Amino acid sequence: MHNLTLINGDGIGPEISDAVVKILDASGVEINWDVQTAGEDVIATEGVPLPNRVLESIKKNKVALKAPVTTPIGKGFRSVNVQLRKDLDLYANLRPCKNLPNVKTRFEGVDIVVVRENTEDLYAGIERQVDENTAESIKIITRNASERICKFAFDYAVKNGRKEVCVVTKANIMKLSDGLFLDVYREVGKSYPQIKQREILVDNLCMQLVQNPNQFDVLVLPNLYGDIVSDLCAGLIGGLGVAQGANIGLECAVFEPVHGSAPDIKGQNKANPTALLLSAIEMLKYINEFDAAEKIEKALFKTLEDGTCTADLGGKLGTKEFADAIIANL
Image (tube, rainbow, N blue to C red; front, side):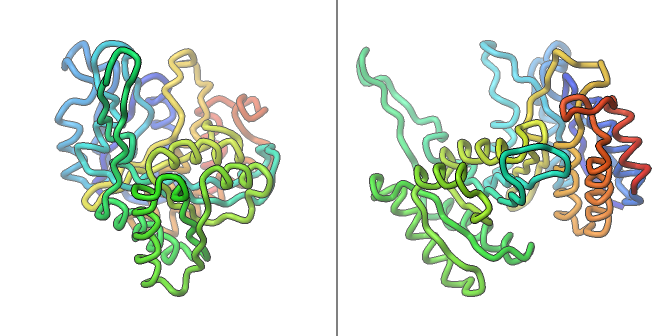
């Protein structure tokens, strides 16, 4: 029995989390869910979108599945995602991007894993107004953060049978900051002779991704490049609606879809739970439930191959009916 935290989110969050939990239960994996609410809906009663009880639950259970939550615009609240990453030191953002059956895209056979450093770079948020015409942002790259994200990427490659880890920088221009990231990658790579190693500049990578994405395996990037490239890779497989994600640290891990809370279709049984389900499959692998992960993935792929899907992918099923179809294929 696994004790896990479930953040069921707001907007479409509760609908898709209900669907995914139902699928996981049907697979036979034993999970005791500690359900936690967060986001815009809890501000009225608790004053903040991410109450401390949510953080305490994740710290206790170590692993969480998180549906999308809404961060109010212009009300002074920190992003729930940013706060989770900061407070739990979730330094690795993992974004597997793999083509799904019957989801039409420009390319077939895409299977890229983006490993993004999650704590520093320009996203450290160190800025100042020099004068009325000039603003300045500080790019922070440290040896410690670079070392642990590169090691994470190589370890992931080894564990998942990947062949190559490609480092992405702009070290020809930012010779000190990106240069440090690149130097650390080279040093860490010496301990992984079985993994092919490759270096590429971020602008060249973007061009090659839209020309021949199948050449890439695992990418490891500083924070800003990783944010941009991960969305580009999501576009290669059908968009954010089918893109999974995870934020992983030394002590805790939070698995979540990339897309937002879509309040415009809240409660209408229209939302596609695929991205959250893929995130849950990655979560099962993380807790060593490999058989259940493989079983659910095969059922999902079979359902999509049959043309059985939600409206956003060209089908006619609602959220609940799509989940039932996947369960029928387990």
